[in-house]
Length: 206
Image (cartoon, rainbow, N blue to C red; front, side):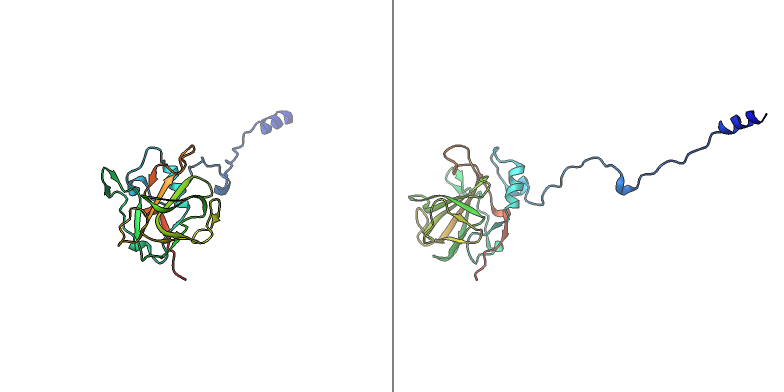
């Protein structure tokens, strides 16, 4: 009789309380990384099909500086889509007194220096990742000693505002263009991106 009682006691089921996992230890499904807070294609304007949203995010992360000393972002005029004959301007014209310092909008590797009938005295430079190309035109002259291959820090003087090339002689300005670097030998001839919404810093006079 005692044996039967032991078996009955052992066979009695007991409810086990559920195990709870602290919220901090819970495994959550992966989520996509937040998109950088920067200009979207809708803000940038016309884009070549070769320019992606990832390119825009990467350009925003470069935190460009206005490339003319003493010109605040609020003074810039967006003339990227202004008509130039059958095409659009594809760049910004930044008006400033002649010989105002022109600075590197980003950390640069100087890729080309030359003078021609259209852009006049020009500089082409790439960002350190070689994803973007920056074009500076109508310069009065280069900074003394500037050479192809130089690495230039953002905000450093690289030249001076002028009217060389086909710029109106009474309207000194910097023609500033940003492009996605092209593949192949003509790396300086990629699709243009409107830089107007990508300036994060002003080049203030010391």
